Image (cartoon, rainbow over the protein chains, first blue to last red):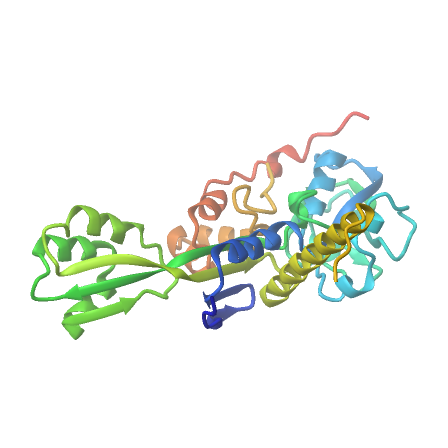
Length: 289
Length: 66
């Protein structure tokens, strides 16, 4: 089976990527999607030493909030050791852990909000993606001093290490229509949620439209099932050989980088499987050329 | 209490939008328009900003007994 393999870029924003995948089997596309969630390492705060804290939020809550702040990981991926080697590591190991420090104090008349930008980082490559995330709101005469250790980790360990908020694929929806045969009820049903589609239909009278825009087609499906049954004028079907993939990053890695890392992770796993199989074969005495 | 850093349903970081959202809504803008401007499409993220009550501004005066 040799289908043409094609990837077409549909939309590219700093934190979002949509592309059309053609000629790849569904299991592979799904594997990439799932690897985006679970097998792409990013930096997140994992250890917090609290020296002083008399704000209203408990140490644990602050530690949790710190962990959820996305940290830039683009360079850190090359610099730091992989999660496998760091999970049991020592927090003093500079090849595993990046150190961030937070020291804030309010005077007797002072009030302030502590932002993620107040985190002092020792490694300029590992810093909060957004500088205006509120961590704590402080009243007068309060203190917060802590040191945080960030490391690489996988999404399967904890959600704070997930580089994506959305990684999804769907079939390409295709609409076939003929204005002369289309029913009035059907058209008005579509117009309620998709006025631009009706405009297109009326303009080109007859034909076929692939919906590559970033929209939900479930209302269209409902219309096609309930209101457009009696005629040949409108048909909605899904091309199950082509997929639209959507990747939305949390900001720590670029979406492109996430997909590449995910593919790498799958390749590594496949190679590992092959070497293990070879090992078993050798052990059982089977010779293979 | 205090604005959640991420949307608890989908995991998108949200807290960075909170102050802009709050400021603009207080100035009388329609929250729907502000959310559209910010670029939050899913209703899980929208509800998190929309329904949040920042009670930490009242609670923060209490002392912790250590």
